[in-house]
Amino acid sequence: MGPAAGNTLFQPLGGDCATTNDGDPVVAYDILAGRWILSHFVAGGSPNYSHQCVAVSQTQDATGPYYLYDFITDSTNFVDYTKIGVWPDGYYMSGHVFDPTVTPNPYLAGRVFVFERSQMIQGLPARFVCTDLPEIRTSVQFGFLPADLDSLTPPPRGEAEFVVGPDPVLSDLIDATRATVSWGTTPSLTFSDTMRVTIINGADAPCATGDPTPPTRRAACRSPASTT
Image 1 (cartoon, rainbow, N blue to C red):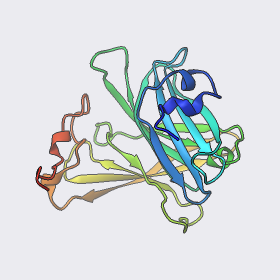
Image 2 (cartoon, rainbow, N blue to C red; image 1 turned 90 degrees about the horizontal axis):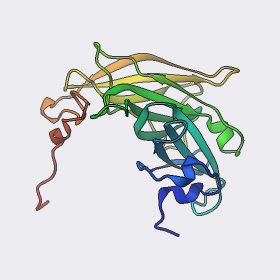
Image 3 (cartoon, helix red, strand yellow; image 1 turned 180 degrees about the vertical axis):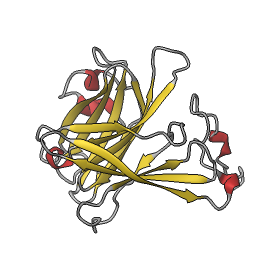
Image 4 (spheres, one colour; image 1 turned 120 degrees about the vertical axis):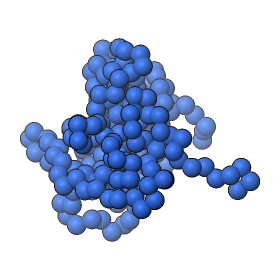
């Protein structure tokens, strides 16, 4: 099988997920359920601008059938750099929200999404909830990622997810925020306990530190010499 365009899998779903192939494909593995999660975004959809197309394998076989979902992540703005992390209470996703009507696109917010994992692994209708990350010292967070469970030993029941990324102001800090989802009648997502970890060697600061419009600090990440 493959290689194939990211939207090939979504042909049975139809709509924007089937007709566009805008990029940032992501593959994750739900080790607790034995399922593959494949995803990519839609930018410039109509009538809703941003979608996240998510496929969950029906078995452990990555080449087998998938349950398919089309989530509208923002009706007017561009949700970029989407990355998924598996946690027992949901599939968490980080996203960076930009205004597509202005060039260059102004960065508006860092946003965390959670998709209803318990429904998706059964192929049932699934909800999602999202909330913008709080600003840190009046600066918007950028370059953050959700923790991804890679062990058959799950975290304690009810343990909050970790959302980790570079501090938007100080290059020698990493910020870690706890995220808690509730799947009640009205789903909710709350943040708490933002911790800051000092990087010992400040010269190797995170790439995305600084003004993210556009992210100009990628050159701060050192690459091995060409002979390495």
